[in-house]
Image (cartoon, rainbow, N blue to C red; front, side):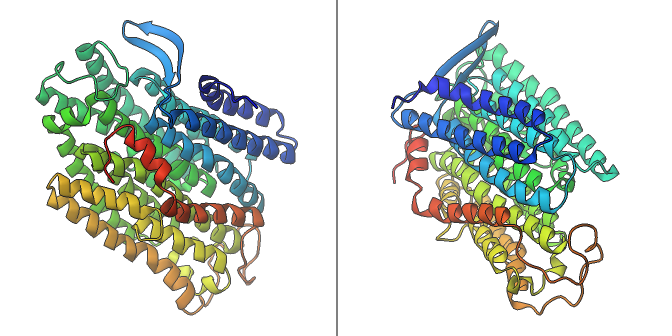
Length: 502
């Protein structure tokens, strides 16, 4: 059987989700057909990405020219190793999240499910565009479209709280990108005469080190999806959305698109050597270190489970930013690895949080005492996801944490190393406390006040979530372990970008 050209596969990864969104909207009256289309398309897109991986792993760089804008600016796609890593994560987790959503949305009796699946598919198309963008302008277009495609998901519930969260979501993400990121892109074009992504960067010798530091800061704060403080408030506010949307925001597309964009800018626009010389990366690395510690401290005091996970995400996004800012070999490697490891660990945690909500209607950590004895699969998976986020073996998070620690040592940035170690200890405190309460504490004396909101009524014993949810949780939990045992494909791709010596 002949595999289509990788250029065709790359274009298909964007076109197929767009078609899926349209077909889902047409099939809205037939839930089974709608969800079958979603799952089938997700599996097919991931198969396309695997086909691309085979070529890129051998050194290929598929390119697609779509349109010409201005001198030095084309609307074009190119598959390179870092973008392929992001695409592999989003492509694998889309059908898994869709499977989870089938169980969750039906059991929780959510409204507007057709709109949810359609917008989810459009969001994946935009994420693939971000992953495969050949230059800053192409990336910017898909980045903005991703914001617009996910806004209906954030406001899905239609409540006043959801609408407020949606307004904040648009305000922060659009204002930072239009005011700061677009200015940085224009400045880059003016200085280099190009906005193309090139290994080693395009700005060295074309921009002074002081100006480069300023432009990198504009990029870092202008990429609001990376949730670097002080542009982070949209992320906790967006937790009003259903749990599958939270999974999309935290693991599959949105925040990963943000930190991936900054990593791509640091490697392919500035180049690690020039970024290190300019000092801009070091400035942002320290802002990231501040965000890592402060967000971890805030997470400890959050009793709402999804809110605690949201603040944990803010902290761990800055791990990626820290690695990109350090601009060392292991910094780039650790940043790329953490995009993957955090995605699998955090989506597992959000899946478990949603399973608890569906089965018991409990949202607060203080209500989870003893629940592990009645939901052992869910809370066992929560423990696995927690250990992956913390970075302990035999979970995949160990590789990214180790690489980032090596990066701080190589750069002799002991304060940043201390921030990483302190954050890991704080992660133990705010994450492992949850399965400890679930398995070792006496059962909660009473049901939560809102237990009768939907589904089971108060007084019914908690049980495991629907089978579709459990299967999805099982897949991502296995993924957390598999990434520890089989990290070589990721290291091989990263080794095409920076010279790893393992």
